[in-house]
Length: 173
Image (cartoon, rainbow, N blue to C red; front, side, top):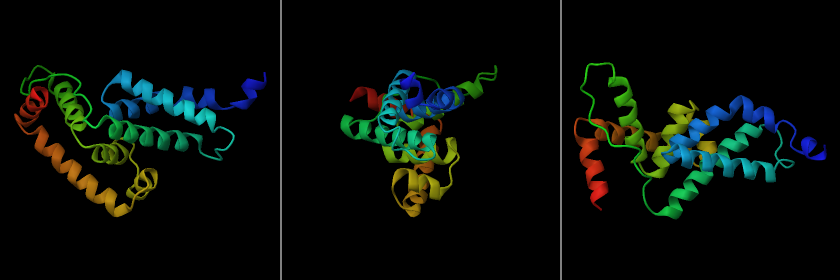
């Protein structure tokens, strides 16, 4: 019974926001299994700090997700793996949207860690520039310039053939 009171509200948080948190973690890591691991590590940190976290527990959990993801990228010293090989969209049988989504996820996985985190915060999580800056511990100007560079790079990667060429270059290294 004591354990239940100690983490009161955690079950509700995970039940209500778990899917959204997992979606964010998957985008940050590039795969579902790595996203699940990241979310698990963030939940573990939240539980260790449960009594010290005042107010927004989900906010704390999201900040922890982003910080752990950046730490992993720095430790690895390489870019996250690309999810799957695809052909550029061009079919007209209804698969265009799926292929475009897959291409965007792969292009996102090829971005440097900070650009990826800023784009996920701004456009997936729909945070303002100020909120993203606070979450990442940087200035609003850094968020603006990083988002601009990230979107520019995404456009480059998603033009016809560019993503496929970049994927082949990555594999040959």
